[in-house]
Amino acid sequence: MEVKMVMRKLQTLPDPVTDIVQIFSHFLQCVDLLQCYQLYCKRVENSRILEWDDVPENETSEIDDEYRWALVEDPKIVITTSRDPSVKLKQFAKEFRLILPNSQRLNRGNYNLKTLMEACKANAVTDFIMIEETRGQPDGLIICHLPHGPTARFSIQDVVMRHDIPDIGNMPQEYPHLAFYNFKSKLGLRVTSILKHLFPVPKEESKRLVSFLNYDDWILFRHHTHDTDEKGEMQLIELGPRFLMKLFVIKRGTIDEYQTADVEWALNMFTNTARKRKHLSNDPLFE
Image 1: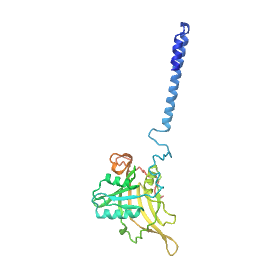
Image 2: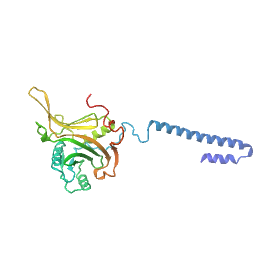
Image 3: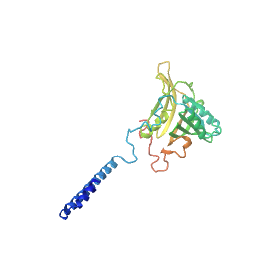
């Protein structure tokens, strides 16, 4: 506004100074153009450093962290199955409950997911797990963190039950230590966060161990305890069950919002490089 007022006053001056007015107006236009050009150059430089959709490394926010209260109190987990489960799926759900401390198995019955989610939220449940099957074989695992997500869906295969493992050990009730191997990418750290917050903090003297090993984006699940033999050497005793997991999708929402929730990550099997790309880590498990 001040520039316009100056221009109006200059235009009211006598004719001999009209040339000065024109020169001054051109000068102001050049200043505006210079400022616009500087802003444009700065914008181009910023776009080269940081793309619009990229998130700066190590930049996190407590507001966006769904697990910021995870260590305040132990997790409270509900485990259920898909509808009309087979005998093998029921048995696997029972054994899966033994893996997770502070978990409770719920018979699915005719309850829909929305009703289950409302009941879980009303009872301060922190995580909801549903196990799926195809033709009597467990083949799917959905982990939903409450109350706002995320929801991770895994495919599972090569399930070996506890009663199929020879020389099986007794199931201890102590909280297990966790071991994650070869989860080095950003997605790998995200999967680690989803899985580790299913377990409470163990005591240092606990002999129980739950392992997640990433091998070519297949997660090997193993469950052991350890003891010393007569020679004083440490021996691993498998507790079971054991199986393979593969991440299929992560969505920002709960399981009852699965169809409409935003996709955080999804496995794409229909590209030429799908078999070659490694998402959880580029390093081999064994070198």
